[in-house]
Length: 283
Image (cartoon, rainbow, N blue to C red; front, side):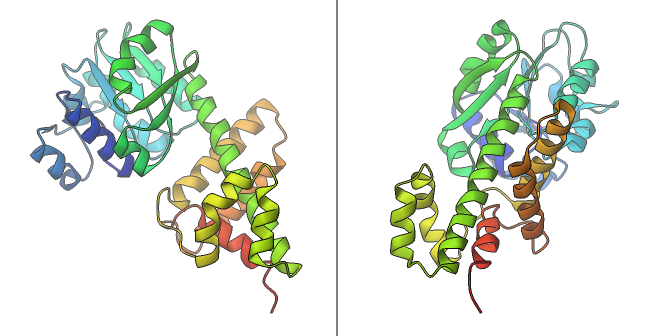
């Protein structure tokens, strides 16, 4: 297991509980301490973590971090062989997946399998996993991935990454539309009860109900940081530009995320809601 951030550490714990024999690596070795106590072994480099492993799971923050842990003499690719399968679970660009494939030795397996879900889902094994790769590779890895959540085979290599960008475009756009609806309702002096009754009659009903407590209290527990959400929004915009899609809603959501991030990127991405809703408050 390469990468022990908020998601990676929870994935490693699930694998240990399944139980699998798990070797871990992270830049900050202290983040591995709790997992080592549970039976994991710590490797000094990503390459050493990969040596002898049937499957290597990578969950890091962004495309640069993926390059850092997979390339070079100490990277994952240096420790893999034709019998190794690499499962890339980070949210990155389609180009990053292609580049990763080019670094692996001939015969090595590769899936791109980013996830939909956050900390609670990772802890409970309730993630949705978008798997891109050959049918045989997905079938080979499904027992392991099933310990983490439900596996949806969405197409060949690269399709998992594409699916994650599509899913996140939906999430960010929904938050933006919900925030603007609540801001407009406030600006037009509709009561909170009326506002959420109206929203309940729309396609946003479930999302409005889920977010109501946070919107009214202004408190957004951290599940997915603004800095990572803004990074993902950048990836969505770049992918749209590359394929010629005109994503104006995604661009607007990216703008709101960036503005919210400027006030603290370690806060939850739903803080963009607070920023949008505040525009409907009259002085």
